[in-house]
View 1 (cartoon, rainbow, N blue to C red):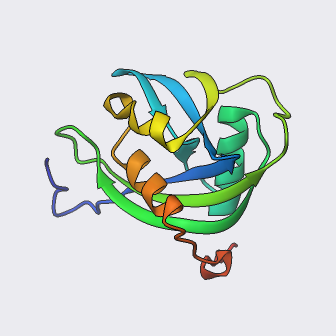
View 2: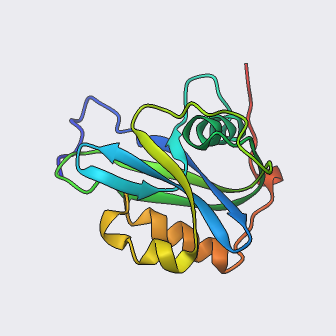
Length: 157
């Protein structure tokens, strides 16, 4: 991995992920990537002008069609991309509630489908996880790790 030059500041890519459970199953997405079909939580990049909570609501809706409401922060994760690039992801994973049914049928480009899977079914597909963070977030979620949303402060302008 290369490091930034002395005259540039390195910045991680900030992402959000939604952990949504219903009847022992987690809402996941199958997505087409440059490395083929991958399994991930509904997740994506924080966009300019958004809060973390707005970002996770938007990403869940765009990738699954479900309106998600964050109820807790499960964890904050720093992970290098699995290649020789200098890309690092700073992921904020949120425990979310979602409505009974999707409110939108059109999913983001690249999303093949949104699926409800048990933790065992997800683990059985580890070879196609988008990143090791998929498993780590699930482990922390199942262990009951919850931080109050009040620990997140957004100072807007």
